[in-house]
Length: 162
Image (cartoon, rainbow, N blue to C red; front, side, top):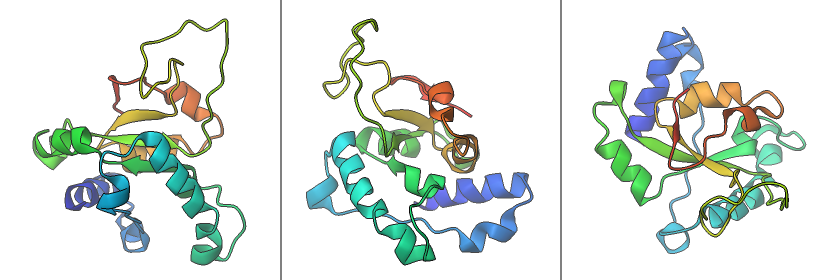
């Protein structure tokens, strides 16, 4: 978490936005019994449940339409090792899993099947591996535009480096 926070600060410094750093809220769920070896679909279900009430509790508003409530980050063992072994934070080659809250599988008989990822043979599996340096602020900024997920999506094991 410290490395992610430091990388966010580096990006904010680059964009001259350090003044918003104090208001940055990172909500972390780390219940080992629930999340150790959890699939992305398990994390997505938990995130959907949390986002059903979080915007009202945090901001007194209706449905949360900001990236905070549309995407979550999962750091599984593979991602954690990539971050820890990815080099210094300012040049890290580590990644995290970025999960789209509202993704649902859509079977298209015209679409060729891909190698299965967590049992899904669709091209878009609802999550992607994103550079830990780019996930916040860059990727969250890019994904603020409706339907940008489809343009930015990279199927694992590729890593998005925006």
